Length: 187
Image 1: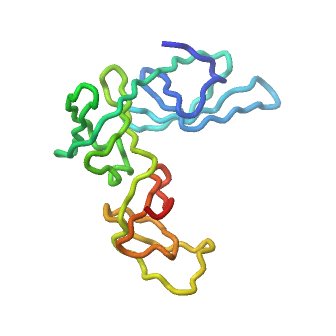
Image 2: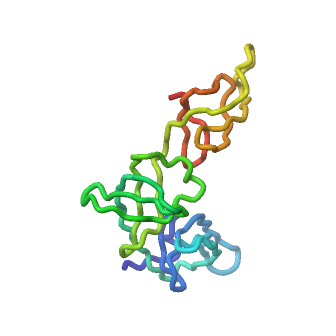
Image 3: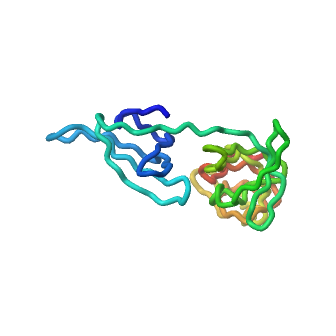
């Protein structure tokens, strides 16, 4: 595996550190008035989700791990396990539903997801950035209400609560950003 200097760590990098696999979430480069510069890195463990703050000097070497990304199609859920199919080999694999975290409700039948593997172990899964959902309930549209910075609460058909502009009504299809969990546009 390639080793990189401590000052080359970027958010999203996967590092092997203290015997575990860690994803760099936030990286701040600090140059104190006295002493050498360092990178303050906030990391999340890919296996158990724990967080760690670590300092890396530019002379420190860390191992950067490359994860294999595979496009897989979601088929169904069974006892907290997601059954996905590899689109190239048609092999079916079971993954724990916790891989998606709070984005789990946006997963729809037949949806293509990207699963990241490290030596046959699934560590992370990501949904498409935008998905279409139906508004299950929201307040009725009020005539004359301006759209300037006024949002109203809404519940989607998958149970997720978000805020939508005042012109969006019940039973309308909208596009939601799965990373920020925010309204994007009408579908």
